[in-house]
Image (cartoon, rainbow, N blue to C red; front, side):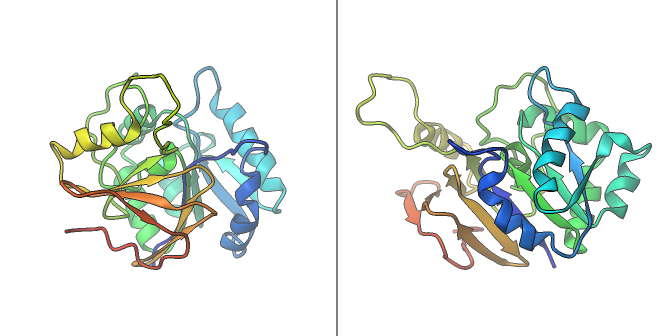
Amino acid sequence: MKKMIIASTSTIYGSDYLEYILPELADFFKEVEEVLFIPYARPGGVTYDEYTNVARKAFDEIGKGIKGIHEFNDPKIAVQNAKAIFVGGGNTFVLVDTLYKHNLFSEIVKAVESGTLYFGTSAGSNITGVNMKTTNDMPIVYPPDFKTLGLIPFNLNPHYLDPDPSSKHKGETRETRIREFHGYNDIPVLGLREGSWLDVKGQKIILKGELSAKLFRKSEKPIELDPGIIRIDISSH
């Protein structure tokens, strides 16, 4: 059975890396000792080792070890042997491109569907959807495909921001961008606000955190989903 935590972000205002979600992670990873970290979305100027050390420091707080996938000779075998996987945030285009280069998409899907725990933040959450077309990131590299893991039957827009009625900025809002996506695609999109995450167990999906999430369907008015809703049934309409 799939078991995943899909978080909008790794860091919320006023807290350290993963601090806000560590209690959830302590319970989620209680049966494993070491988590495989995939740092491929690394922020600019940060090495895989540096990024892995950031994750390691956070996981030390819950008594769990972290090992970067780049520390293994064969990334495929690393995924196959992992009891738990954490894919960090950064740039989704870079992440997807690198996963394709190492032929890891099918390996991750097989692992998660076989029970390997999956935790993603930001870019690592984006790739759990049907495709990466609703990412906020700049296309600084060109992956061979926009198709991603498809572990949930919809797309995400992490870091979702509501329009600010007091702003003088006249550029496109997140809602506008998602409507543009629906001009060419039928896939539902869930706007996941900061500090929110999805708890996935098999086909059951629970929205957690203090904020609602915004659901967009093609040609329909967006709706708000409150925390605690079980089975966000947005796979088709």
